[in-house]
Image 1: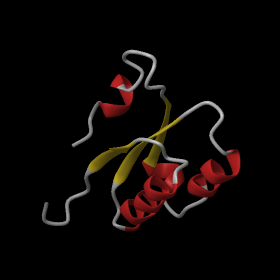
Image 2: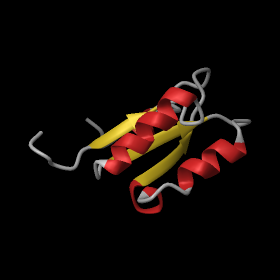
Image 3: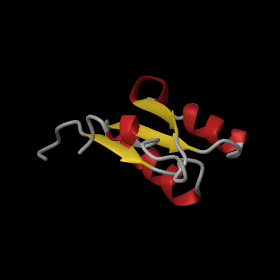
Length: 79
């Protein structure tokens, strides 16, 4: 969108693909809603939190596919 900052939601932030995408989105200046599950690898989540820009532009949401509505808040405001 012409260099405009966007708001994205990524599920499974502790996973290899999602964590790589989060890194790229942050490098481009975008904001990210990242979901994680209880029991996800703490070191992986911390590594994402330590990325440049993450403290200002990543919001964290605990979500579970077996819980209806648990992704609702994470999706709000995202494209």
